[in-house]
Length: 63
Length: 309
Image (cartoon, rainbow over all chains, first blue to last red; front, side, top):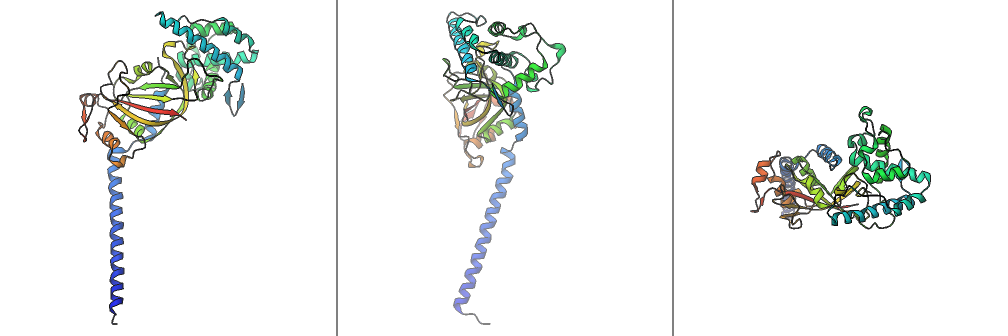
């Protein structure tokens, strides 16, 4: 089947768009993964343990 | 006293009697301080007697319970208040006269309560019920002479895990009636010790909490028993304060942090959390920790500024 110039252009455009979308998705995914792997190192905490410690400290008398 | 779903609420007449008692004790404290006397000699006056005389028998019973509750939390066994009396060892029970302040003893005796009887499990259960409600309510009908619109609390030896949590939330829930002070210096005494050191400065516009400043056995502590929700508005860090005997230049913060700042913004919050030693490490914190922005954390005091909501 012989394609016309316009048809070829359309196919190339669609292919390029698909590639760009894939690249953007991969980039977002990589960013999200990087944030997740960075988070535990610095900013994670055991909420239950922290609340228990605060409650125990607030319960202490001031004397 | 009205109760709904176990909630205790004081009637206006009892609130007024309490306010008058506290106002008169506040005046006495001022005089005693001015004369550089101790605060152990607060005493009952004619105005207090008049308000008590006007109360009905059942209202007096409530006032007696309020004074007993304040006493059990401030000079009794706090653990037994928390456990609603379940952990209280009756064998070790002391007579009320041993734990009451002089003024509370005088007031209870005037209301025909026998202060020589021993404290019971039932008393602790009553105090727990009473305090769980009153510590989160506004218990004044008219503005007291000495307002308690600013509350303070200090605590030290916190884990880094807890600091991380405190940096990640803008709400604090105080689930049980806890001791706060209207006096920054009193709270400061409990904030300075081994790292991590924290101080809480809380605006209390509706004057929630139970005023124990006059009735507590330790009137110099200026105690208010509070529970409830606090919104954290600002976090400040002051260097060289963890070993300071007094809270000097508290408004001159070395770092100011917005509690809403995201850890992922790579701003001051993440910079500081990242720099704190993983484990409690007094030496490192005292010697100083360098931050990427060129500043240093050095014997820091973490101050949480909030508002009762």
